[in-house]
Amino acid sequence: MRAKEIILLVLLFLVGLFGINAFAAADKLAITAKAGTLGIGVEGTTPINHELNARIGANAFQYDYSAIESDITYSFDLKLLSFSALVDWLPFFDNDFRLTGGLFVNKNSLDSTAKTTDSYTIGNAIYTSAQVGSLSGDISFNALAPYAGIGWGNPFSNDSNWSFAVDLGVLFQGSPNINLSANGPLSSNAEFLADLAREENNLKSEIDHFNFYPVISIGVTYKF
Image (cartoon, rainbow, N blue to C red):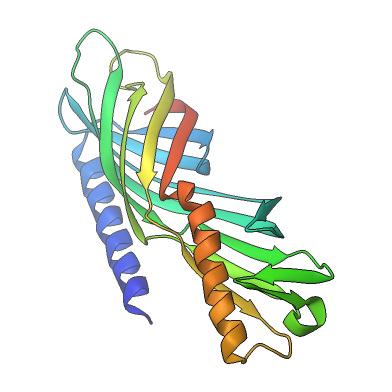
């Protein structure tokens, strides 16, 4: 098991332990079903005091799309998977506006496959499809990602069991880690591999906007 996987497992255990202890000690618990840019998710919320709430949650989704990056048309498979441990600060007594900070276990990733064409411009050279074979890649991000945002909704501020939740924020998941590979006759050629490394850098510069992943979500909450 790799060190990163061990860190993820330890963090998940700590988050789960925190959640169980917090929920057991609290008189109140709320569950939120939500949807947004992180996918479909579920959260548990419990109050720490009248100004602070603690939240743990999980999000997942998957979808495909096509885009031209560095002059190559790729089919992308975006896989969203994340686990969150967040704290909401409610600075005002008269409304449910909140400031949120916390940490995500970030398993978001992109799988890419170049669409078949007669030739590819890779790095500083042009190669035929017969030379390249299948060109594919995987793109991943930092395993642990800080989060900061704002939102509206506090399930413990009124007597109703039902309420709505809105979150707007940014997930700081870092520069993408890109690994391109080909299975053609040149797959072990030193000059081709150097051009493939240049292509990785070109692709990285064009998708650097994923460094700061926008988080927008809406949800429906039930308070027990």
